[in-house]
Length: 65
Image (cartoon, rainbow, N blue to C red; front, side, top):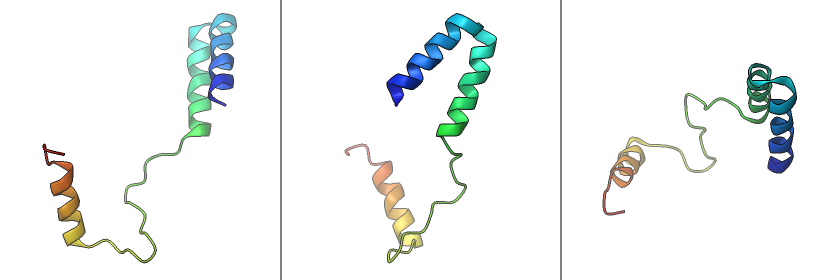
């Protein structure tokens, strides 16, 4: 799929020019990707707690990991 998308976008640059290709690239990207949600989804059987959030922050910012 990625190779096909790259080929299509490459042909678009050659045929339609950079401005039109940029518009088509944005349209293709919007069809493939979704916005990042504002809030993380809850996992079944594993509710988020302040203690888990604190642990995640400690692990994320731990330079030794």
